Each structure stands twice: as C-alpha cells, then as structure tokens.
Image 1 (cartoon, rainbow, N blue to C red):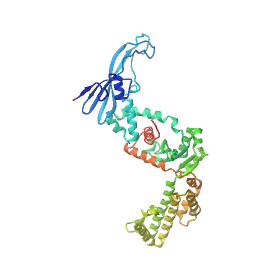
Image 2 (cartoon, helix red, strand yellow):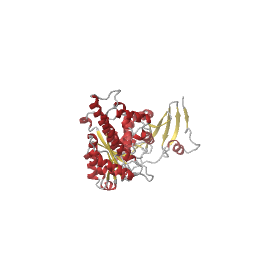
Image 3 (cartoon, helix red, strand yellow):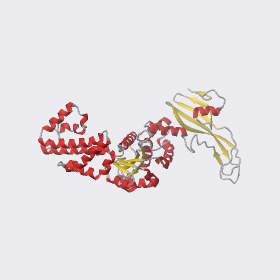
Image 4 (cartoon, rainbow, N blue to C red):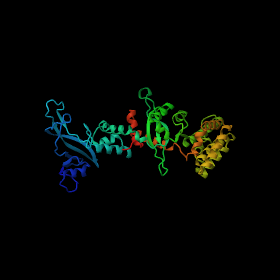
Length: 439
C-alpha cells in the first residue's frame, strides 16, 4: 500500500524548491513526488532546467535526458527513506573534446559516485559520537553495507583529523596508554597505544577532556615524536603535563616540554599505596600461615576493607579490621602499611592545598626510612618523582583523571564494535567518540 503526494507533510506552497527545502533542507533540488509504504518512503527529486557548458571546453551542451539514481537518506523513525534523484545528463557537441557525456553533480546532496546523502553521513557521524552507535547498526538502518557506510564516513573523519586547528588552545596535556588489540604484534603492530588528552580548563574551571590523538607504542619516542610533530608554537603553550609514573613519558616531557610543569597523577600514586598494603598483607599471610589466604584467615577477610578509605568504614568494618589486626602480633606490619597508604591518600584529600602539600612532604621525608621494605620502596619511588608529586599542590589539583575517563570511553566503543583490526579506523573512531574531532 502506498501514498503518493506532491510533498507529504510540507506547508502549502507552489514552489517545488521551497517544498524540498522544508523536506530535505536543500534548495538546489525540488521534490517531484513522495511515495510512502509501511516500512519505506521514496522521495523523487530533480534539479530545475538550466543551461550547461562542457566542463572541459565550455561549449553549451545539449541535454541527454535524465537517469534515476537511488540514494539512501536519513531514516524517518523506523521507516527507511530512499531518494530517487533524476540526475540530468549532457553530451558535449565539440568533436575534438575528450569529455563526451557528463552528468550533473550536487555536492550538498551527495558526493560524486556516492550512494548515501550528505545529510545521512552527517546524521551517522552524530549518532556515532553522541549516541554510542556502531557502524553496523547504522548501516542496517540505512539499508546499506558496513563498507558502504564507512567509505562515506571515513573521508569526513580524515579531513577533520588532519585539521591542525583542533590543537589550538591546548594549555594542559595528559598522556596515558591502553591496549587496543590482543593479537600478534608482529602482524598487527604494537598492542599499546599512547593517547594524548586535552586537559585545559574553560572559563568556568571545567576540564575539556578531549582526545587529541592516538599513536602506536608506549615509549619516550612515541610521545616525543608526536610532540615534535605539533611544532614549537604548540609546545610553547603547554603549561602543565600530567602523566602516570612512567619514566618514558617523563623523559619525553623533559625533552620536548622543558617549560611545562610535569604533574604525577593522583590516582596512580594512591594506587601505588594501595598495592603496597596488598603486598604486605600477602607476605605476612604467607609468613604466618604458610599458605595463601583462605576463607577464615583473619587477613583474608579484610582485604577489601584495607583498600577503602578510613573515612568510609562503618563501625562493623572497623570492628572486623581491629579483630583481624589483633589476631597476631605479626599483623602489626599490615596495620602500619595501611596507615601509610591512608596518609598518602589524606594528602590528596586535604581541602587546603597548603595542608595537603605538608602531608605530602611528610610522606616524602618518612616513607623511605620505614622498616617495612614495601613501604620503603614506595618512599624511594616518590622521592625520585618528588617535583612531579608535589606539583599537584602547586597547579590547582591538576591530574590525569580526565585522561582515565577518556580511556573509559575508548573501552566502551571498542566493546560495542567487538574489537578492531585496523589501526587507522580505530584511531578515527576513537577521536570522534572522545571529542577529538568537531563537525
């Protein structure tokens, strides 16, 4: 069952171009008819007559009629929309001209040789970015193949990714790595990708947190080469560079961003303290029982409590913690390690940055002398990173947290796509999903 009208749903007007402008948002073509079925809609459009010269020689060309070209447009709810474009054709009358016949092009309607309308491509890009859609899902809605849709989208994303103006205004930079595939690195290249994130705050103090780029590898070279490619003007504007405790990234910052302040990420520092408590608990567990933790062992029952902040513990949890630590004198080491981790955490949670810095300096001056080897090792690590550790309190709590949030978005989109096999496609999709490309 179908319904044919001049322009369904359009305001009353005698101008076909005006009707199409309302229906399609295009003034270059006019609507000839609309046929609506239960699951599909077909809109026939054409351009008005106009004199046309040969693109090569300029001689006025006589018409060769029109051909029907079927295009896929933005779906109307659950209804698939097809545009039937009655495309004009001409023939060059000049005998010596190599052009022969040629057809009209409307770039605002569809790309040359394309089958998906420009606005459908823009709609698909918006769905990918805002609604966490997948190429496969959008291809089903448009009734095209995965490759057909990606071939239409990819050139747009490549053009946006190649626009150096998207790096303008970056004052604070974050860096972190993630694993993008689990295949053979000799076939698919490095498993690790280094991601650069814009951590610049806006006028209201909110962090932009947008992905700037992804490069293969996790090393000083990977980060330094990317910074070098951005140019001297970009590097000179970077005031703060946040990172996790990885010497390769720190070396790249020292090499390429000599005027920037390196800030050690708070999350990773607290994570190091929590890991120390776990290491001490497991060692003491093995020394006192001769085996790994089992149900009923005092230290095994509090492993989750030891990872929590002291201010979050309930009375019941405090009682469990006290009983476990008092069950054996050797458990005193676990308690001391836990207190050290809480001191480290308290430095970051201090409301006043000056008070937080004092706590951080106390950690630096005391941890490395602790008789517990795991705590002493953490103290030596923090002393090696002293300037970057204390910079958190001098830069208004700058940290790499938003970079971890971007990594969360990347993980989400990789799961939605069931993984990626092509690095270039992966990079473009993640740049779009994490705000690195603007349309």
